[in-house]
Length: 83
Image (cartoon, rainbow, N blue to C red; front, side):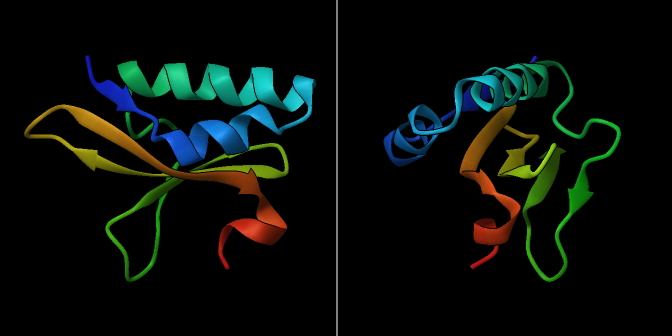
């Protein structure tokens, strides 16, 4: 089982999401504890980061298999997340 680390700035962004999206994103974050590279996740090109899709929203994160740690880097709408 992996530990999911959500920094304060990401938690603030999560709190501003619409409630229905927030619940789905939270469920996706919890699922990363069991499987940090779920079906549908993609390794980002030229980066050591992964992304998972939740509707029009994206979760960008790093995986440290040695320490069994998933660090959430960004959560946001797809139009804003890659800027």
